[in-house]
Image (cartoon, rainbow, N blue to C red; front, side, top):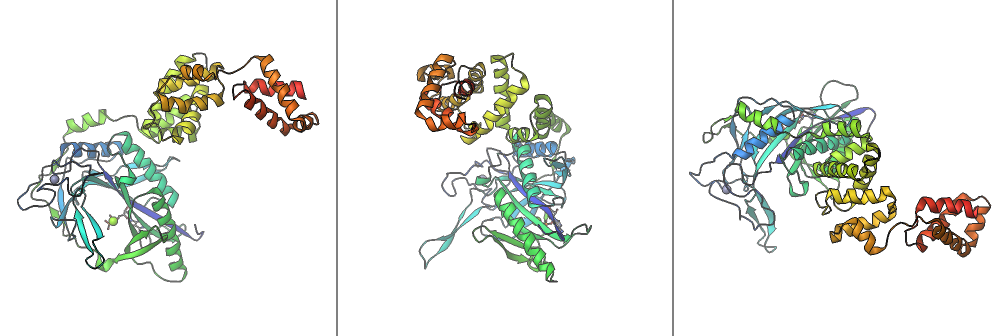
Length: 483
Ligand code: ADP
Ligand code: MG
Ligand code: ZN
């Protein structure tokens, strides 16, 4: 980014609460895979006389988010009508919160530890969806799907505390982890369960005043957030460098073209004519309820990360990757417990490191802990066989996918496939001799002191042994016998 200017970024993040039903009616909240308008009723389609009733679970999840993020929860908050016309909004208003949201303040720690301050969090309902360009060319028209109408959201608004596109992405990842840990939201961005509007202005580096901002609407992937902010920063810098002025406006990210485009300016900004919704009483936050929710909070990602570093000796990076996803961290801890039982003499930190590598490479590559059918104890069993020297690391990597696919125990697969590691020096030496005879050039090079020629011989021995030769023994015997 430019040396003369710095970006100032604030985010408005919409998160879908993990409820079974919508915010003010009993319709299912999950419309994925359903026919259009399968999940609708008189309330969420805004029929005259239909009255909203607040979903208790949605309120509990919202309060849980506020507690986990360290916000202040006032004794009461107020639902307000945000009035505007759009075909996906049959009531002509969205029920939201405005002057009195359920949460004020709070913060999210970036990986480096710096806190990004939250301004507020409020509850609101989602709107429907328009399907454009349906029908023949001549009669092209748009259809309305109201499955999403009334789905519960919280909107989390940050202070303009972020200073780069990377920080914005780090913030979103940290926020997502907290919300997933407490079960507030699944935060599946592909399903639109977490999306954000990014506000960005630029100012001379070191300045304390804020520049004029543009708001990029509806970014639904981390990559779009990063790309849109990078683009918008460069665009605004160019405007200022030419002596121009940034106009306050709403812009849209065009991912295909890689540009943001003006959607509406300040003059066209909506006047939503907010007023308290007369159909809904204020939302009371009972102290007993808040206390119950507070006690129910799990260990949060930052605390868990710190514990993984301090108690298990994992690097900051490893602790970060393992704790970013709760199911992965849970899996890792359960496997570590079992592995410690399998190999009580092995130092805990060494086990943790071995398992951490394993979980990060083999498991994440195959879809993560949630997709993994191998119970943690089984993985611990496999690591145990490896640590005891029954199988090599390489064989372990071959066994794991088979455990994944067949559901069989590691020892059973090792026996079935005859993959026990061969540590018999005589057998390995015989393979080494054969390998040297079949690769005279590599053997001669090694004798002449060309260390890297050993690699070809190791490879040959491993092929001969079908991967079963003890690698340390192979290395040693090649050194002893050939050189
Ligand atoms: P609105 O509701 O009109 O979008 P808000 O005042 O609620 O306006 O601000 C929304 C977001 O914009 C917040 O995240 C805030 O931090 C951010 N923001 C406000 N002013 C600036 C600025 N000058 N530069 C960058 N971000 C800003
Ligand atoms: Mg905004
Ligand atoms: Zn409904």
